[in-house]
Image (cartoon, helix red, strand yellow):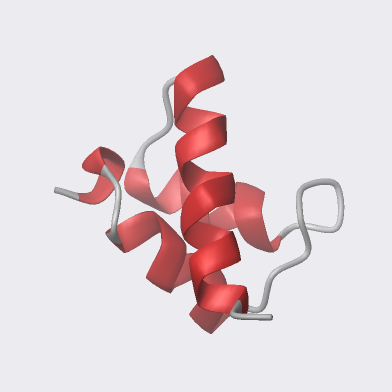
Length: 53
């Protein structure tokens, strides 16, 4: 499984539900309450969305 691509999908899903800043999205993706991605995976996913543009 490509965890980076999964992180991108998760990031896009979060953004479709609610607005996030880039750093907020990274925190959500990497938190235990969120998806538990590593910091690197969360950063990769978030940076490929509109939140980090």
